[in-house]
Amino acid sequence: MVSSFVKLPFFLSIFALLFTYSVYLLQLFTLGDAYMGWLLISIVMGSALLFSSTHPKSWMNRRSVMNTFLVLNTLSVGYGTFLALGMLRPYSSILSIIGYLLVAGIVIGIYATSLVREPSANAKVLHGFTITIGIALSAGTLYFVYIFYLFSEEGNSETWKLFVPLGVYGIVYIIQMKALKIQRTKVAYSIAAIQILIPVVLMLLWKSLAAGEGIL
Amino acid sequence: MKKTALFTCVIVLLTGTCLLLGFAYSIPDEEKQQGLTGLFDVSKHGAIAYVQYERGKPTLYAKSDQVRQVVQLPADQSIQDLTIMPDGKTVLYVNSDKELNAESTSSLHQVDIQSGEDEVLFTRDAIVMELVIDPKDENRLFYLQAAQFSPYSPGASLYPYDFDVHSYQLDSGEHEQHTELNKYSMASLQVSSEDESIYIQMDDDVDAETDEVVIETKGRVFKIPLVNPNRQLVISIPEDTQDLYDFVLIPDRSELVYQAIAGTNSKGIYEYELFSYNWETQSINQLTELHAYAEYPIYGADGKVYFVVDHEFGERRPDNRLYKMDPDGSNVEEVTLVN
Image (spheres, each protein chain N blue to C red):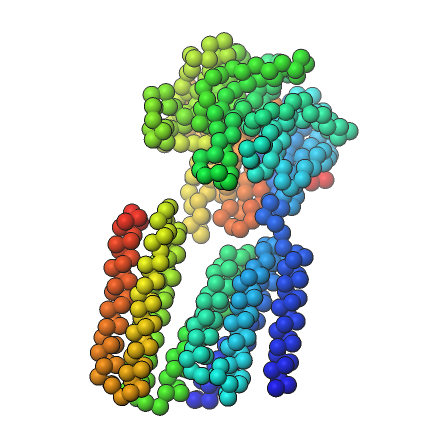
């Protein structure tokens, strides 16, 4: 079981690469759009994940590095899924389902790399908790930014505010892990309590911004 | 190490191929338009002139006994409107830039269907939008002319503005301006076959003084006598269709054929059908039941109503086909436009 989780990033990277090529080529030949920038970024992300998962001794195989690659891959595969949704049928349904599954797989991969290789029980709980908050926060931020661009006529200069909770979350996460490393378990857990509040802050921020724009 | 090299080679090769294919096969936006447009006209004897996009190139076809390609313009050009002469032998069309800019002009072309001989009758430093031949005098061509106007910052695309009705005498080459209304918009120009007047849709903004009020005004249909353009007459239209924009007037029948939502299909996509409204009797009739997207109705010189139906409405690519019917909604049939 453990070994199959360790291999997960490898398979995910292969599927992400194949998904990228299929979406790019189908988009090109059915609709005539060449998303070269996305292709390059997505291939570099997929290759980085592939390399990090096949080279256990490299610095790229470190947990934090691999998790970063996984997170970046959710973004590139997510955009690919968005592109797939706008394609002709039946490609749109087939590719977008594959895209959703792949994103779900990568999210599982994030949990797997964080938890399976973590010996300390305390850290396991905290990791699981923070990742869940992180995913909810990222999904929420992206969703709000999307809505904001969709409906806001002006005032896009305020969009950066929506990313503040995610930034705070990142900093808090780092402090939490440092606290755990130096055995300050209590500090680490009390920080976790703060983390619960961050999505609430995002909601409040969104409400004030949206009210200012008259979206709500 | 060998494996890494192999993987790298495969990825670089695949990505390189994809990029090359991308450069070779991607289609610029202006070349993406494809298929039948809403521009078509029908002569007395049923000859049809229509515009179809072929990889973004506006292409003029004529169909009498067979289909013939008459004109093809580059993909950055557009055909604004066309009209087929009553004899069915020549087509007049007005040509401008697809992306209007401050230097855009429009020119009226006269093209012979048989020989393809194309002659420019006049060029204007403005946008000519619609062409209608006077049913009472086939040498008189009515047209809508608009100035260009950029509502936003410099660089934003331009929209036609300041509309007025003009006419052009095909035999003498004389122009005449009939209205001095400088309207925000005018559309669906039609010329009466009975008296010296025209029908036009425009905003009912007589009392509007500020820009904000103009936005709230409703589009109405007016009858304007050419001898005294100030004596406009509002044609009453059904309450719930006051914002209608896709319609045709059939003055001989006191009728208006217009597009409206008739229902939704199993996927929840709206179905648009054609309806008629008689402004004498104030009765409404549903004319079509095609369960698709019926649009661009015109009243052909052969007495039939022609319109386009998109059978793939709501999908990425339209599937437009030409139909015709009697003005009362009977004898609905598809008009085949291929040889």
